[in-house]
Image 1 (cartoon, rainbow, N blue to C red):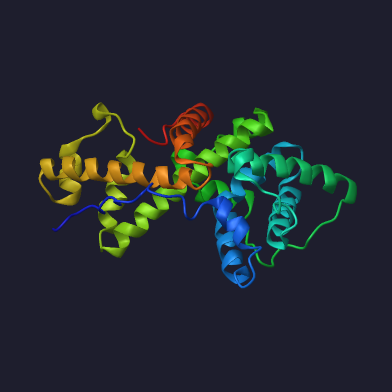
Image 2: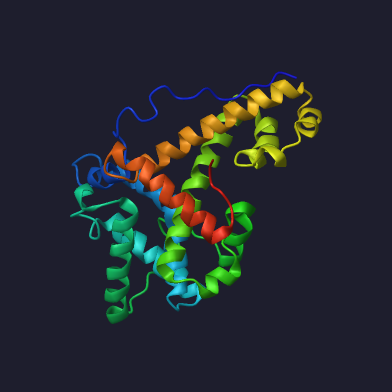
Length: 261
């Protein structure tokens, strides 16, 4: 069995050409609207969970929180919410949270609703909990007791980790190595004593030393992908490590899991 790991990108953080900030700006450049909408749809797909969680914890029912989440993102598509977005004002995470709070204040007055469907697709609360990686799921007790702001950040950290995992899986599948990903993904953040290289060797049909090398490369690539995802949400490379430390501590406190080592 031939087993290999995706090669680490050589220019992972050499520039910030495509950040979440640049996606917002692109929507206001003539001729770039369609590309911007596609990128914003991807943004919504990644980050709708922390938005939904925040709204849900603010006292809205799951169906209402779902509707409000969609309406919030539609305001982004319409270009009315983030037109004045400025990376100098802080992290993209903080911008969205501020914008979401303002949106909920306005909505409390208007009480308008968009029908479900349209440009953004959502799933039920039950599907969300089922689809979320088990190690990144927010415990129901936390959903019912934690402050909305804390849940937003936990959901945000989980979304970043999930997107990195998704990219790692796609890279492996493109090289015909889905089985390697399926076996090793559970050990990306495991402590040494939690890993049985003998069992992994049998599962993959390769020598133990090969497993050690594979896991080392997988972890390195996963960390690189995490850095790339975080880099898209901060104003400069200098802020990446600080944001990573914050999100790591947030997710660990919220779910008991380490998103990365």
